[in-house]
Length: 273
Image (cartoon, rainbow, N blue to C red; front, side):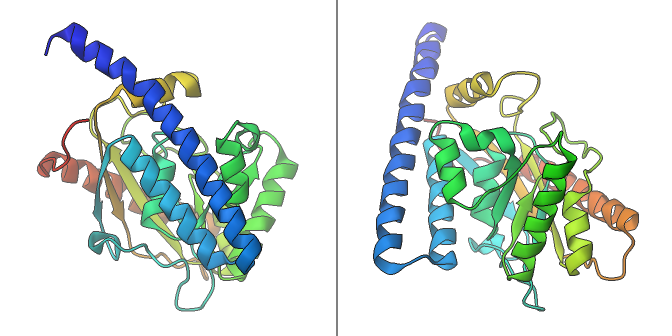
């Protein structure tokens, strides 16, 4: 195949994937609404639909995820509750728009996300119905409100998924954390489960660009490989906030390095699209 042919195929993937994404989101939304009206609301059903959504997005973008850690190595999600019955707080480094469907597939929980996403076409609709907790990073009032929302979720036996770096970064260095997830953990004695993600090559990284440009670049790629390593739960009970954050950050950094090694050592099993 010539470079021109390869370039044409890459560009053609963008509208195909975006259109398929929109159609699937709206179809799944309609199906979920119909089922909920007939059978009533159910957290279990909502989480199943959320995972279905995440897996479909990974398939549309031809993302190969190599998972390591408890439960995920056998294709199962990490349970949203610990032994105490309280919900867990899952925390991951943040590198790409693909982090959301990757983590949705790995663990049972709802994301904390930037507030403006709730107003985006299609994505905002799905995110709102999925129970996403929205936060305006520049507002102390919004930050305090989302901490209270996380506390309520955890106390109710539900889990939340947080990217505590606050935004996306390129590379494997885990950046300093924002405090919200750890404040919620301290108030509830919740377990924190760290996750480390690494992507093959630089194409998946969401850097200094618009979301549209990032999505175009991801969509042009024939295949994207990601390694995701899930760590053991870390207890928050009786641990000072600063110590807890440092402990989790160290664990996450080790998991990111493990994910990078996993990518380097594991041959691909997914054909290019």
